[in-house]
Length: 304
Image (tube, rainbow, N blue to C red; front, side):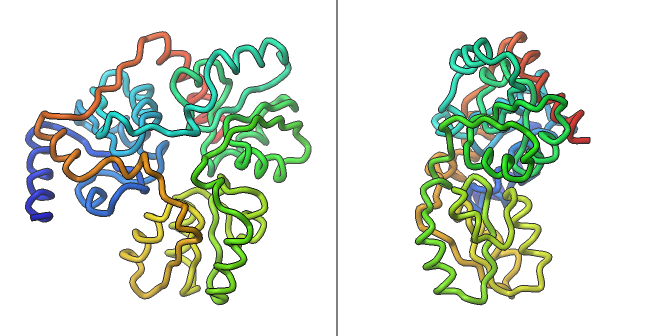
């Protein structure tokens, strides 16, 4: 039955001229029918180049918004209308606008995991893999890094010459992991390397053998000669890696590392969207697209 549904999705997406983008945190059976898989920004860039006029994002809302910002002429659908991101929704345009008035010296650096509305009042976006490199290249010394204080702490540590100010925002999933869990995991798997996402707390990240983005973690694990790994990001990554590297062992750092928003989208949601039912269309006004696009363009300029 599963293979039948997947085969029908593949047929319908071709028939209806739909490109499917699937974030790495969604279920493996969805990745198998996607045109492209990966991190949110990498998927948005892929969307720019595809010939299809309709793009289905299987992920969360800010990811679909990023696709719409970069591809305003395409119809962008989100697989599940309730798939949001707690971190992206922690801060809003009014809050950051007020801080900018009080501190005009700040260059506001927004993690890509922010809403389109919030991006309109920021100077530059970053991804978890590009944050350090981009902040280094910013001309000003005073940086306001939003929303994730854990990724921001990592950036601050790597670039002590910058005055990086952080607010109290985070990914509640990654930030739920405590140092004791790391010590227990390393004790249980003494031969395993610990690979951690920078959205984890500094007390967790300090024990890591590698700190990096989801794509970076997967690349490191696949290319390493080591045979065992503790994966400190959303637990689906350990599953995907096990499929790709059956000769290696992958352990989830904590059972708390599960994103409920990512798990909302199912294969049947994808099926319903490609056959013309369900899904949620992302619509952004021209002013929002123009202003939000500015900080993404700056990310591309500084990241190049």
